[in-house]
Length: 429
Image (cartoon, rainbow, N blue to C red):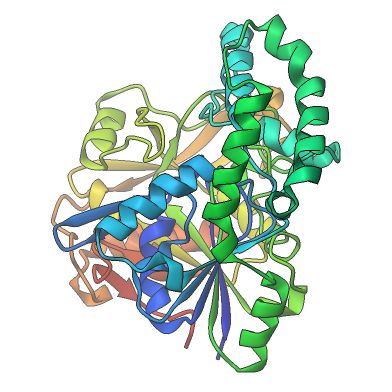
């Protein structure tokens, strides 16, 4: 029996993690976010109500569950205030359910302004970020000049650090002709931030250990996806944090033995938002059909997602990087209408066939996918809850993906609702 489960994405994000976290939270007492910021977007569909969360863990809709924002998350107080307000209007008692690490670096308005200005100045070389200040905030963290949540509780010292930070960035603010809050305005806003955050701050490592010792079930919730990892992704077209399983420990304050099961979420096809190489990307009617049926628009930015065939090469490496225990295959039902399916089984690069992704974006962009064709099923899988309900061709497709990746699909998601799943192995069982 696993008492602690980590859920993370194996592609470029948008794999459907929010729904699965929401599902598994039914058996958890603690849900922990450990990296990223409000550039993430987790969509929950419960009945007729859709909820999109960017910072607060997806388990917040469950009574009796504590949701934690760990130190690895860069925190925008403005975004958090909006999210708390949205949830409270729906009757969710956020104050009872949310806890925040005092070590979270703050995203200030100047970070957002810098992020957007840099993307604009980069022109055709832009990364395709969400423009929400994530990168500049992580830069300040690594450079040891970040302001953190805990700093808000000594406002005299906070003002001194803020002045130093503002002076550091002042040159770039003027260079890009950025209009943003001046120093005095930021100081005033800090007072509001302190009042907002104070009730939620706690000793997160101690809280996690307390739940572990009590034998409670803990769920770690990743954001973005493995292929966006700043070290292992398609650099430089990546996010600014580590999205792989190892960051769950450093980003929340626990040891590797605290995680007993890693569930990798992967779509039955592939999508990507923003710039960067995408070997299996489709520019035909199949790609259009996947985008339309899958409602492929980013939950954070609203940008259209690029769509392509399943890339077994990339997913096999993602499973290796994360020590995946089992996969959850999502959006199988989106492929119900396709007559023929392709699976990328290898890449061709400079006349050589390779079975692993090259390092970085430049070489990956030169890779040509090697495809294997399988028949589609052209019948309805939406809402199926048993493997016996799935068409034979759909089962064959799933089994072939498992074989190529070397990993079993413990869960198959057949729709957006939390109960639309074929569950072979429950992570908490």
